[in-house]
Image 1: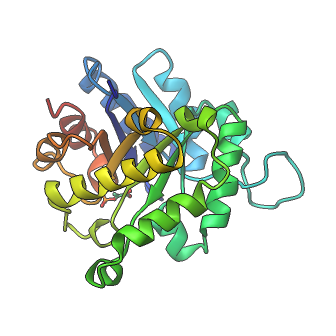
Image 2: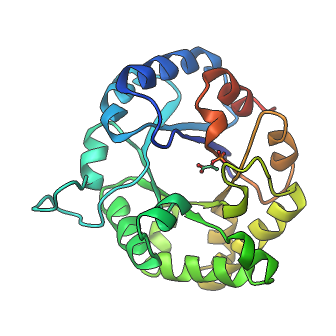
Length: 251
Ligand code: PEP
């Protein structure tokens, strides 16, 4: 039985005090959400304050990125996975399409970062997804397969429980255009087959695969009704405590 995950990606929004205020407002709204894991991903500067305020609650904290380097060193501007764990995080988002698009993130760096997250004893939420041209060309599955085999090339069977995959079609992120539940289900089932081929059927069946792309309170239930959709990575609609709580409490 895969426990669903509803994760909020706050992107580059909110100061420390705004982040803490939103996290504090969210706490009572999702306190009874035992059906899923709840995660929020504030900006780096707010991680520690938010994690401290959420201690003892059912909300976990994720970083939105981390360094590929596993040890501290002369890497100006970088933050290591073990440092975000030290700040109170349990998860790190890796390979978000905005990082691939604007910060030259590649499958090679995604692989190194996922390894760094696992080495720090954290869980990586690894994002994959095709853009609109690739979907229209009919190569979406090949693109996603390549992102998995390249971005998780060093993943071993024993590390599979340290990975959550987020399928986020780029054409649906921040556009208001959601994949239909059927389109998302089709790709999620495909991703599970790729993991079954690479690892084992049982590993594939345990893997949590989240959908991301304009998830809102009014479309979450339809997505969650699909057999291979195990949760959501939510951007815009996670910035507001009430709307994110409605998504968490989709049941
Ligand atoms: C995201 O940032 O991962 C995302 C899916 O954004 P949005 O929900 O705004 O499309």
